[in-house]
Image 1 (cartoon, rainbow over the protein chains, first blue to last red):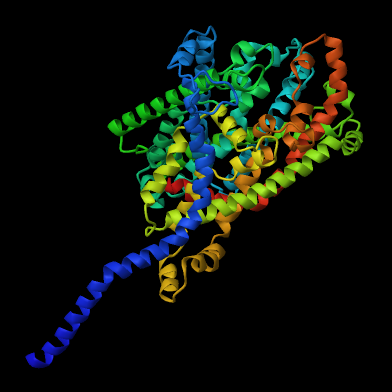
Image 2 (image 1 turned 90 degrees about the vertical axis):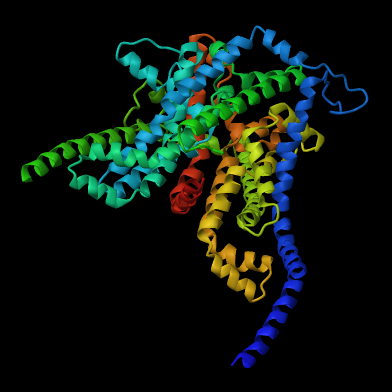
Length: 327
Length: 296
């Protein structure tokens, strides 16, 4: 019995040894052979990100230079000026108005735009008819596909001096107001139109999370005599909380990050005191008139830095007080 | 017990009614502006201007549509946009889908490094001016590639694609193909791609809509008007410059009268293709976005 057993055991062992000897080499080779196609698949994406994301980060260096368009970023003749461009911005009479305009637009936008998609998602999810909730959501998403140019064009048509809103106001005995020339109308128009366009789109992720809520939890709550409203508060809301806190961190990271695309389209002489943002100012100083690129880059990178710091603070807080954080 | 049930149902009934009424109101708020643009575009411009058009078209006329047919700049913009959008979609799929697949593989060498490489630009960027300078030094200024190339990869979309592959492709299928001796490219093209219609449709829609609707890169990089995409042409038609919004009441009224109808029509003409496409691709893309969002 033992003798018969030994022979195969030995051969198995030697075979195993041979296999082990081979393994590192062939495993490595197989690994490399398998990875070469992956590298080829990744290459275009790596290249695009390098060209259009990393090269511009390198380009921030001009913020510390006396830079004339056409100069090389690093050459023998580069004149380094340290933080001069930054301190120029801090002493710019526009500094505080820009900070204020950017911050207020973002914070008002956040106060309305953050809870709205959550509330809408909870409501749509609470509807009894799945079909109706799907149809409504399809309608709510549709404005997301309208371009900014068309959206602002529509705003001007509706809120222009002879637009629909003024026509209705006049027929009710009101006065004509050129909303686009009123500084006080800029923020409401900007924020309300943004929400009109995007609340449906932003609610998609919450609706997706709500679709995953365990049905048994709802049934148990019904047995306990919970009303639909109580079930929303105690079953649905906790289920989307992880998503809510992730979105909250992202929103706080974007609190000073409002883009230039829409604000530029909405700017008029009348509302410039409120509608000039850090990002639109960067565009104007850096790419229009007599461009001062080093200065504009300094302002832009200062803005990116604020965003990064805000994001890190938000994430640190989230890590401290909950289990949900980005990293 | 029975009474309690009844009472709760009543409370719930009221609650449902409130939600339904509210959602109907929201639907009206969403749809009415779109509806108004349509009825205004086929009404007599004077009737629109004097506020007679509110719920239905007045003195129906298609003269505005006839006028826009004659506008060379609009149709040239249209053609340019179609070309830019088609190229963007094709290139973005070539860049995003294979990269998403590679990133989703656990056997990928340096996977973590690649992930960090792609994550950093999500949170920190060079900003507008350095970006502009990079485009200039790549000599892309005033070429259509300045509009197309920066739009062919969004890191969000890349990660969504990766998440889709991680959750939707059965790994035993891939293992079986490997044992049969299929190479990675073979696996990708003959197994993965056919199973990825949902994510490919979603990505095509995202990138396509993004390019169709964008104006900013075209505005800063293109100088020849013959290369302008539709949105840039629209911007000149739709967005009143400061001088037209200001000025005396009379001139404004005259300008409004002339330009208004064409504005309503151009809103429709430019948005219609996408709004019509949307319901058809909607089922794919809802699927795609849900997978992506749950993973993130």
